[in-house]
Image 1 (cartoon, one colour):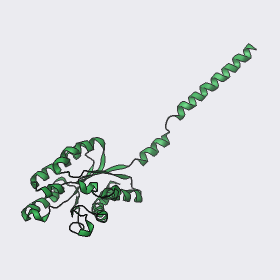
Image 2 (cartoon, rainbow, N blue to C red):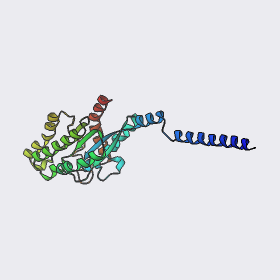
Image 3 (cartoon, helix red, strand yellow):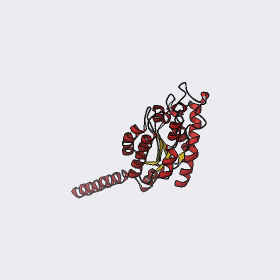
Image 4 (spheres, rainbow, N blue to C red):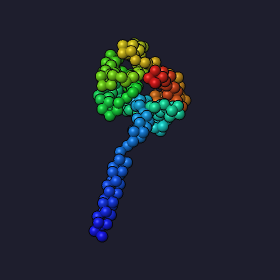
Length: 228
């Protein structure tokens, strides 16, 4: 009788031990699951700019970074847009803020759209150029493999011919010096067209943002093709 009980206890203990072992193994992710997570991870495309990037006066989905993100999803591309636009941002402000962005995101592509507010305020183009260069340098230093795309801007004509000419040269100069792609003019086909701009005459409407998105996409898609 005692022998029978001992045998039964041994069987039960062995069964319990077997169950615990099975639970422990099943709690760990399988190799297949780990590989799936790696494959589905999306690369970050940071849109770093001012109210034009932020989509001032629009629903978030109507801002041009969101429109480009829709392209990523529709085309099945492994990228996602991060809208890091801040209304009122100048190049000087961006130079300070970019460090926080780089601490929180590792961009595969970094699209730099700043300078519009500098032009509106008549800030010395040399100072704006130096600030943009500092932002580029910070991105390169922290993430050397990141592709940087510069979005060009123009100063309003009421600032005078000398100023607008000097300001417009900032972007091609920086693009050439740093060997980075350039969107010649972010607001090409939108600036100065009343029906494509909001009441302030500065910020594009939802329809205007569709054109802006295409301006950026025409340059961005070339970089994506090279990277993939």
